[in-house]
Image 1 (tube, rainbow, N blue to C red):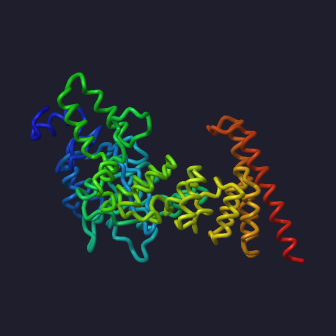
Image 2 (image 1 turned 135 degrees about the vertical axis):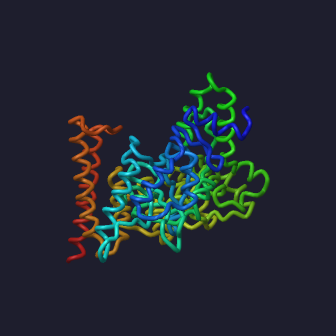
Image 3 (image 1 turned 90 degrees about the horizontal axis):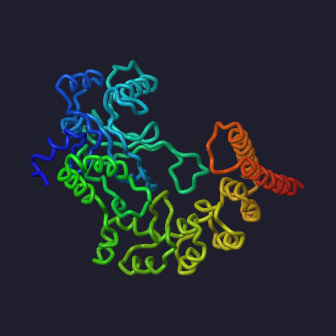
Amino acid sequence: MPQTHALPEAAAAHGFALFEDKVIFEAQAPITSEQLAEVERRVGRPVPPGLRALWQTAFGGRVGYDLQVQFDDHVATFSFAELFYPESDGYRDLWGWIDHERELAEENADEGYDGRLRFLPFGGFEYLDRLYVCLDEPHYGAVFAWMQGLPSAWALRLHEDSVARIADDVPGLFRLLALDSDPFDDSGDYNAADETVDAISQIDGPEPALADALRAAVRRAVLDWRGALDAGTLASSTRLRHLAFRQVAMDGDLALAERIAAQGCDLNERYAGGGNLVDHLLASGHDAQAGALIERGIDASQAIVSAAARLSPERTRHLLSLGAEVTPLAAAQAAVVGSVESAELMVDALPPSQLAELVSSMDDSIARAESSASRVEAGTLGSNMTPAQYRQQAEHARALQRYVAARMASNAI
């Protein structure tokens, strides 16, 4: 293994850099004084020290780590794959993102816009997730995350464009980066570091010692929630608790849930998407395990809105008897996947004032399904569903529309 002080130079020759012990691949050369001056000219303000330190290590590149962001009461998985730089081949390069932000600032300015940016975009993923460093007081140098909301049909996901302050500076952001699982475990499962690992493997031949050093850096970022569970320290780490909860929901492992609870962890705690363990178990298809937790008093108030498309009529009745919240969207989600009986039970629990909203939602569902069927037939949409399956979704939606229409007619009598 090369000595630590020689690692940055050796890595740079092969397109790697280390910043706060995190690997950057496809790393660009450090920023020059001329490039820094050009950035500051375009944004109209000095670049904060933290971002300058990153750019002095690599003025752009790619990263592969997991990042969790708390948007109010919603924990979201944030995609941070690219460090923007001039003339990159991303969705926009650095200059393009700066121009985009200036256009938005000018459009939203109450008075004459002076051309200066308050926030400088420096990384993210395509047009969906973006990281900014603040250029103005009182948050000068702090990092903010912006995330685009997904359509409301995506359960347990962020549904509104949201912003959160996540670190005091750019080095602090990189210290938040971690890996939820080991990318070297040969499981075949997706890992945020897959591309990093592939890039490192390309230098095994010419630089085996450097490759080993970079792999060691990647491994240092792996979170070990199982080790914390064995050591009895799981309750002290929010991130590790949430990883343990995720494993319970994926596997339907109630024995693991009991071990977690025995260490003082609250099984009512809400994590990804604002859902708790009951919500995620139901969304993963583990009905019996979710039912066992409900019987022991774990909150099920959001279970219908979180997992409407996975609920049997029996579970729907049970949740409604417990006072679980129901929405027009939940009924629509259940109907589209063919759970029409569950959807009808949800409709019966809705106040009359919300039925018109449900009819409109069904119109949208039918239009989307019919459009998707036509696009698959035309070869303009790739999908794992056939045109016939999309049209079946439309028929399910029409069936619920007829039920709602009958309900509205009976209310009018």
